[in-house]
Image (cartoon, rainbow, N blue to C red; front, side, top):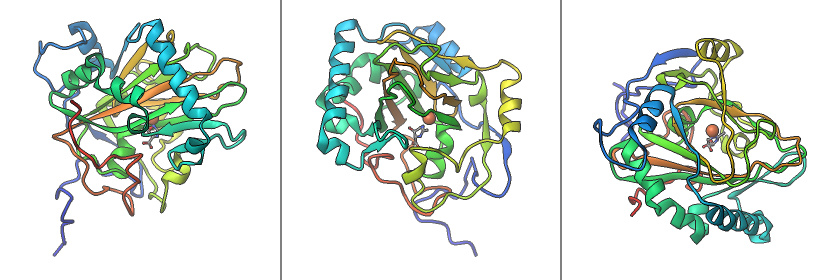
Length: 301
Ligand code: 6CS
Ligand code: FE
């Protein structure tokens, strides 16, 4: 008699972190709202998002708004209380701040960005429901050596370690500095969102303490990346400060190191549908802290 976990659905649609890697079908829509549902993204943007897994907006923020959010990022990064907080992740080599999590709760500037109709309206349009913030972070990625993020699907982590049952979450990366081809910009494999790569290898205890610096559990094999990128290659997402990239939670993505003098700073917001709230982790010994995987499901208003 198997005892079902009280807070976990009986079926795990996306089993992962077992003994072997496997390609599984996606069992969820990409765009959850009905065709033609109005919202900040035009039909072309929604179609591109559906097909490739991502779409970019050239100037989500105007130069004044970029300056405001960039100043707020600089203020947070300079604040010793933030550096001392568990929400701050530092670069292994330089001890510079790499990321600060839960910025939508510790900064009114980023809290109001979350509520901005251009942002939350797009999330609702894609997810077809009210939404809450599953995770937010600023990535500083300073120059001269900031390290990148190896290939991964965010959903694979959010399913395994945070207990998100279905692929009904969307991320937006808003550039606060120019994202060049040279300074460690986001790379996404077009179409990779349409299959789920079940990864091999169990989740270690307190994995987030390492994975937010260098992810190991939940990363794909070289063969899987080679196969996934064979049909349509790899897209490097560049854009001026103020541009934004909306990408499906299951896109295979990563970014390289930044050894240039130009920081690649962005704010990264993750919206999850209120119909897809986190349950218990599907493949981890314990929940992650709420600053990484939210447990407050209050819809963004
Ligand atoms: O573990 C996470 O939730 C974070 N890690 C990465 C590399 N991307 C998604 C997310 O911010
Ligand atoms: Fe990621």
